[in-house]
Amino acid sequence: MLYGTRIYGADPGLLIRKARTAEELGFESLWRGDHLLLPAAIAERYPHAAGGRPPFSADAPVLDVLTVLAFLAQATSSIRLATGVLVLPLREPVAVARAVGTLDVLSRGRITLGVGAGWLKEEFAFCGQDFPTRNDRLDEAIALLRALWAQAEIHHDGPAYPIAAARFEPKPAQPGGPPIVGGGESQRALRRAALMCDGWYGHLADDATAAQRVAHLRGLRRSHGLTAPFEITVRVAPEATRDEIARLADVGVDRVVAEIGSFDEPMGLADLEAMERFADCHLGSRTPGHERQAPVA
Image (cartoon, helix red, strand yellow):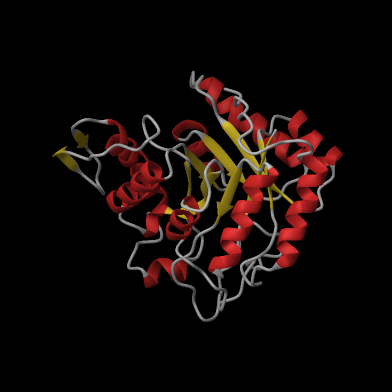
């Protein structure tokens, strides 16, 4: 099992302190979410909570996720840095490919790009992006990112982002580009993750729900003859027990990400203490730079 942690907050000193502490404790990865512009009153139902209530207020302090990861890259040396998840259809994908590729070079190959279609309709309107077509554009953007990161001369024939005979240098540090992880719980999101991505990033789930997701994702990959490594990641509460995480491992989860902190609360010593308690319980004698386990195909 791989162990990551979420990183919230906007205080530069505390962000660095938490990132360095996570690395020293042996966490494998840091994950941070994404929004660009929040409506003053959030009317949309959040799809990943039973009551539909968003996990943040309109006044939540939201920093640009790629800038935060770049900031933390220079303060750390081995921990992976991941978006969990970037709302890619809000953005022009060539600019994202350039920013993420640059970050991968400067971090010496430590980036994981989690992507999702997004759910907040007002945010798309604010950014001048069409909401109903976001899934189609996300699928095409993933294919374009892979072309930009891998092809010597880029040819991409797509309705939203056609490109012919272009060059994109330098390539990212990781061959073929950073791993792309698909987020989301809908059938389309799960299918996208299984067939177009290198892994799936899920929300808080019990082991029964996780088992259903794992079986569905692995089944889709088998039915399409996909045998490349594929990592399944789910969030867990910071107080998750060893037995709870063991059950997630038993059903095929490759990584858990401790949900420590929140958008609305400024990061403080309580977050650091929660991270240390989680590490004491689950990471045991792990040391910084421990070997990554190979994910299941």
